[in-house]
Length: 353
Ligand SMILES: *Cc1c(COP(=O)(O)O)cnc(C)c1O
Image (cartoon, rainbow, N blue to C red; front, top):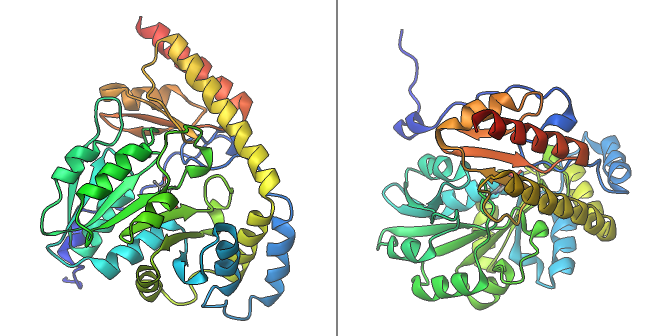
C-alpha cells in the first residue's frame, strides 16, 4: 500500500513523544513553566470571554497589540502576536527563508530551532557553545555566509541558562550584514538580573534587522493558553502577521495576556520569588560540587554528559528534562520541590563518590 509522502524535510524531525508524567503538577520541573496560579484578574477576564466562543476572535489582535504598544512605547505596527513565540518564530522563518538558505544558531540551544529551520527547507548551521555554556557570538558571526538569512540568539540560553552580554550583542550586530535578520529570543527575559545582559529592545532601537521574541508562557504563567509575540521593524512585523494563520490567537488568550500585563506588581513579586529560589538552588548545587553554569533564567543546567539519563531516572518522583549525552535541565518550581531536587542531586553525587 502506498500513501501520500510528506516532504523529505520532515524525515529529520522527531515525532512528538510524551514524557513520563510527573507525580503531581508541583513535581514537574521539566518544561520551565511557572509553578504559580494565574495572576490576579486573569481567570475573571478570560472567563468572561467564554460566553463569546461562538464568535471568531479579533484577527487583528487589536486589544493585545494596543496593550503591548502602551507597555513598550512603540506603535502597534511593531508587534506581531501568535500562538506562542515558537509559532511566531515559525511564521517569521517561513516568511523569510527558502530552501537552500542558511540559518545560524548556537548549539546546544532551544530544540525548536533546528526543527523550524528544517520545516522551511533551510539548512541550520549549529555553532557550539563555549565551554562555560555561553553563546560564541564571534564564531557565530564567522559562520554567516552569503546564504545566511537569519541568526537566532537565545538569551538567556535554553537549556544552559547564561545570557549574552550587551557588549557581545552590540559587537555581533556591527559585524553581521544588515540584510541578515537577527532574532533575539527573550523567552526568559523577566528573570534576568545581570546588569551586563543584552537587551533585545535596545538592539532593535539601533538595528532594523533585529526581531525580539517574547512570550507569556514562562514568567507570565500562561503556557497553556499559547500566546507570544515579536517586536520588530513594521515591515518585518507585517511579514510575520501575513505568515500567521488567521484567527490563531483566541480572544480568551488575548484577554488573559492583557490582564497579565495589567497585573505587573504581582508579576514582579512572583518573578522575584523564582529568582531568589534560582540563586539559592545554584548556590546549594555548587556547594555539593556540581559544575552549574551561571543562569539568568528559571532553570539550571547540570552538565552530566553520558549520565544525563541515569540522573533523570534517579530524580523520580521529580520530573526533569534530560538531553541524552549532554546534561539535564531542571526548572525552578515551588520551594519544597526545589529542596527535594537539591537533596536528590546531593544523594546522586554521594552515591558516585
Ligand atoms: C519556552 C520558550 C519559548 C516560548 O515558547 P511559547 O511557544 O511561547 O510557549 C521560546 N523560546 C525559548 C528559548 C523557550 O524556551
